[in-house]
Image (tube, rainbow, N blue to C red; front, side):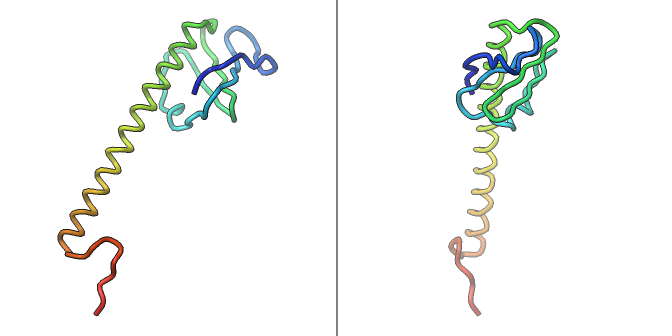
Length: 106
């Protein structure tokens, strides 16, 4: 996600700004973001930011940095989950002696 420009039609003041975003917004990453005093909402390629202070370039940078950190964290968690599932399948295959995707016949 890259905050590209202000979406003027949906902006209601210096503390509530809607931005046009380049790239997909990951709802899971957005839901996990925790930034003190900042609320984020997304719809399509729009990101709405509400804050207890005026939204400055520094605030935008904090949002983009935190979003990138959360996306990396989510990717690592997904990789760990995949590795866990693969290890479980490997264990089952080793204990049964059957290759994955094959049924035992009687």
